[in-house]
Amino acid sequence: MTAASLWACVVLAGILQLASGSEQLPSGAEPFSSTDSGPLFLTPFIKNCSFDEARNQSRVKLFQEKANATAYSGFITVNETTGSNLFFLLIEAQNNSSEAPLMLWVQGGPGLSSLFGQFLQNGPIGINASGGLFHRNLTIQKDVNIVYLDVPVGAGFSFTRNESGFARSLQDITVDIREFLSQFEKLFCEYSGRDFYVAGESYGARYAVSLAHSLKTNRSGNITLKLQGTIGGVGFFGSVFQTADSSSFLYAASMVTQEGRNQFATQFEIMRQLASSGNTTQFQMAVGLLFQTLFNSIPPYPPTLFQNLTLYNSHASPLYSEMPPDMVQYFIYANKSEFKKAIHVGEDVCLRYYNESLILSLAPDLAYDVSPQIEFLLNESRVLFYTAQMDTVFPATNLQAYFRSLNWTYASEYRNAPRVPWKPYGGCQGMCGYKITVHDFTEAMLLGAGHYAAVDKPDEAYYLMREFITENKVSPMC
Image (tube, rainbow, N blue to C red):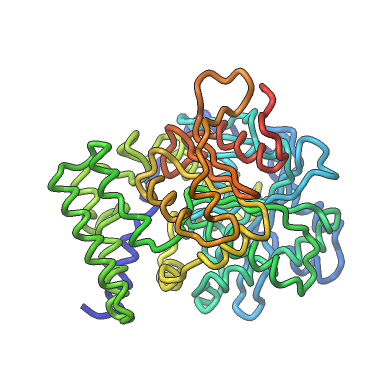
């Protein structure tokens, strides 16, 4: 098998395994007014200092109509040579937007649109299992101005006109985000010098860590935002061949037999041996084996070992074997012409569930260890990492073991610290998770949540982030 074909195994990534078929938008998703059409590129306005015109054209009426929220969206060009453009959606805070912090939210995949977070996790507009929109009461946008950013280039609605514009490393992604923030501050100058949080889930947690580290260590450029904290949920940290080894968890959850657990464990042991050889070709073989083992493939690719052993077609949680209906409805809705016109991406574009070119380009990043950046942040900044009790992709025990392996100033204190029950608000019946807080580091575990933690437990994820941002120990009852 050639190296190229081994890398192509990554395409088995049905990582996002969208349900097949071209379903129509259910009647529950109401139409809304939109007069905009075609993609809106804001960089030319920024260069010409036509800020008022850019803001007027980028307004998103949908959020005013459905959630009484002020929102803007469009594309910012981060590399003119390659024609690389990042899509963003800014939603102003409900409370005291002129002083509230700014949060950047990035999704995982790599390749998921950050709109996944807006509609399914923490934004003011949600979508239900029937495809209907609703106003989410507990939204992080209550407390922060939030920018949903489709990153890297090629994720969600972000795109490049030249394949050389796809990121080949985490550093490439960070450079693009910094360029985005530099232009964003010019267009929305009210955020200059504002307190800033960066947050991401799964693969997106890597982007969050890398950007936070860059902002702390490289103050060059025009970014004046003041980093106050980093949030990483169910993150891809450490060696993927360690943290993604779910053989014991799958067995404990009765998803595989003892023989299946042994098969899984053997596959991961082979991967670890290949990856540790120091040989590029053998590392590529380990990656190919990884994507034949985990996640979910879709025809014409053969099922993965996970699918064959568990008979599941969703690799997120033991609690559902297929993609949840609200998630399916989100993908359908996000590809509706009226919605795409409303957010200024143009009705002719398609929200892809994964981008083969992006995945192939970024595949070498699997070998990159972000531990030094995490250790730096633990010493220099506030950090919240949360895991999920039912995560079958990165089991909580694996990530907790990884956190204990990190070396930083308060590492010994952290390793010996007791975890405490976490109740998100006074009067809460029972508990919703566990927390360990040492110095400026909080590690939390959400009960009953799978890999899409904030989809499964959106209220709890909201309270967790709110506590971190406001530094309140107990959130008020809502």
